[in-house]
Image 1 (cartoon, rainbow, N blue to C red):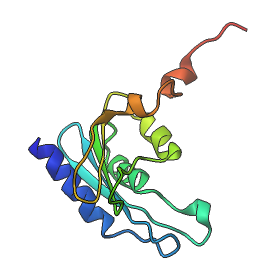
Image 2 (image 1 turned 90 degrees about the horizontal axis):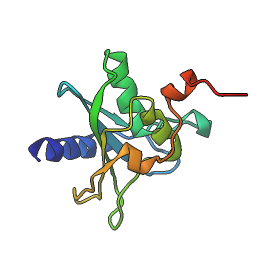
Image 3 (image 1 turned 30 degrees about the vertical axis):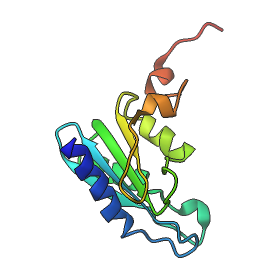
Image 4 (image 1 turned 90 degrees about the vertical axis):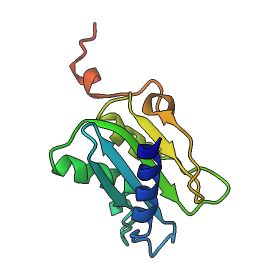
Length: 137
């Protein structure tokens, strides 16, 4: 429980670093690697909108760049008061690359959170194993 509360807090802190001059919609994420290391990220917008990065992909990319590819959990924070912030479809697919059985903690701005697995957020997903599957044609 303390680990999750700390992860949520770190996602909120990362949210404060968001670069979002176009949407003014701040998002932060904190990803927990299997060995306990934590990596944070924020959304980074760009005048060429598709070139922007979501907080979840920023945090995971930081972890991967440091040699981490096995994760236990990710917490996501925004300024939404009355609803939880969930990862977008692109982030869900990006997260899927690293497995289905890790926890996702969408939060509200007050720090309250829900616990879900990535498998719940992205049912019937396409992943690395599908690339090696052989199909009868």
